[in-house]
Length: 173
Image (cartoon, rainbow, N blue to C red; front, side):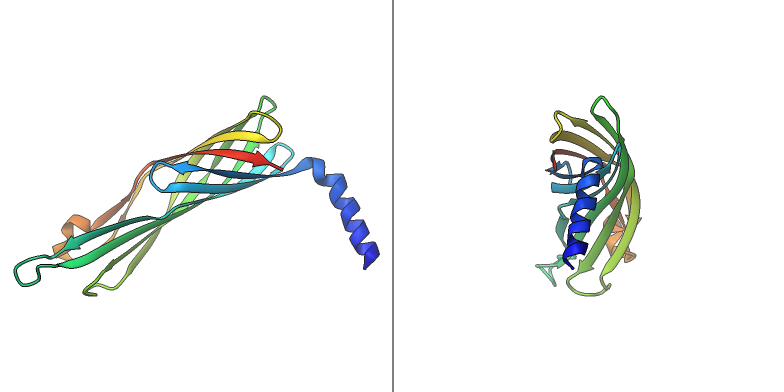
């Protein structure tokens, strides 16, 4: 067991210079907080980004018989997968996709919870200020999905995932 552990440590230390890990944190124009992680192998990188949830709550169907109406809750969650290339001048170009999910429900349960997913293109740029610090800008395009089919909810029949811009600072290990 000790020999296996020693061999693994030697192998990892010889390849450590070609492998790096970056942790990023920042803010997204729609979703608020954003975190990401990137693994770099030489000039290539792969990454994963998670964004805060967007939740909207509206009161619908309020009238004299039901003055409080019903709660319409719409929730959006986004995760992004991407790959990229780091150029020698410190700039990194990135491309990937965001998997965005929509969940909707109405408190009176006339229509059960609805879930839709859509893939949205993502482009990004990064710049390395040093061997350890970087700044990154990611852009994800908008998309629409159908939400509720009830004719009384015509205003909410389509949900729009807005364009989003994320700016993050990163620390590389």
